[in-house]
Length: 412
Image (cartoon, rainbow, N blue to C red; front, side):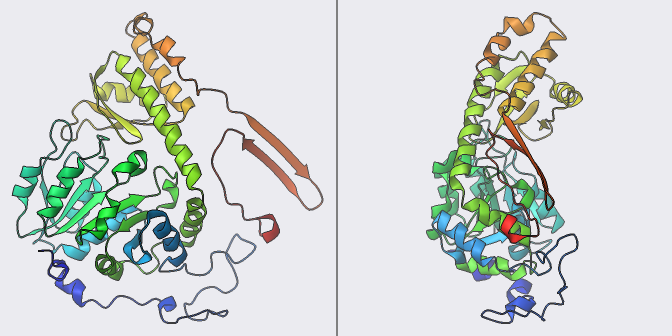
């Protein structure tokens, strides 16, 4: 039976968390003389935007995230990227040199890195040939020292979604902390396990704004679990781990779910086109099924092909050294223009060895199927007056947004 108190490291259970200045009062205030901040403003900005510490509890942001995901605010934890959440989970529940974590290679590398940083034993149960879970082997690996199991779904680097029945079987037979990393779930949203946090008290589901939401640069990871687990993790987080700019950008983005959905549709459509063309390339040994925004391919001489793309200014991810990924490259789905350049460069690679091979496999004709390929339409406008000098270039086919701080609120 799951018992959270027995899982928490004894020193963490006894820990009195750091109380920031903003934790010591309740209500509204106009004059803040509690946190030793600079009251004069922010260097480089004409008004005070960043001189105050951010909300340590991210209340407004958590409200939006909770509403969007149909959970309560008390069931949400925010990290400086999902990497911080992974580290905090291990630190909260795993005693160094004593406890163990199970991971399922090939998988996201930070599970092992965070475990080793915290001096926790890593036990590996490799996925099968189709990158699915070997359930019996995972259950056999569990022992009294096993505190956490990490499952990535859709998996990185393979891209496939794990069988939900396998996940449920493991949860039902494990009394430690089960973590499902759903960084890529927006590309296969009907397979999310998030609702299960209300059924299983030992489940943590992680998601992110880095992928489908297009906000990798702000570093915001989300953890969902029951309140008791969230309280434990919150106890050991840095006091202001989510900065003001991240909170502000995320709040704006979350009001634009339709735009995120458009991103997902566009990326998925581009992926389908690539999945149709890439198998025609002569180097291809196998193209693995994917539910993410990338494709894993096995090729002849992965290192050579990878280096060729790099020489042409195209960077892929060489996964040749990971278990089960021998000879594999991982290709992220780019814009239509980037994907076209990828395929054209790949076609040129083959021409270097056989001038007619590109035509023989039909790649030039298939490239024309990229109906979304077009020259970007742009508009420019300039305005110069006594008070202003404004030059703007807009991509009329773009779907992004930006935040502009002029120092004059009317113009922001």
